[in-house]
Amino acid sequence: MFKLILAIILGLASIGCSIFILVEMFKDEIWKGFVGLFCWLYFLYYALFEFDHDWKWPLVLVAVFGGGGAYGLF
Image (cartoon, rainbow, N blue to C red; front, side):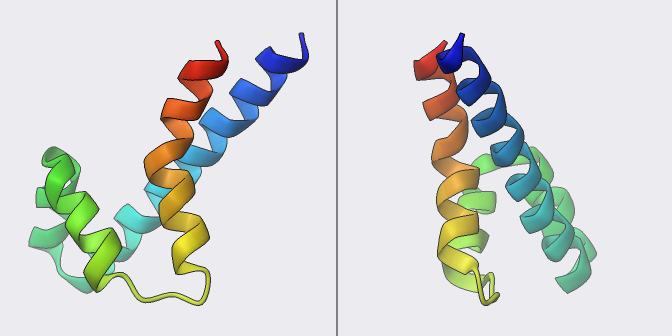
């Protein structure tokens, strides 16, 4: 039961961080937002090299690896 709750929390955190980065992509340029929405590799490139935020690395790590961690806990 604990693993299920942890997986749900990690999955929701991953979705939230991904949406936060995607909103920043749309704020930067509209075309970057659409490309990042449809192409995961560009999303990763933007998150690693162009995304500028005080909490950049925790947000990027949870967005990228949180979904895999949640899947592994299921």
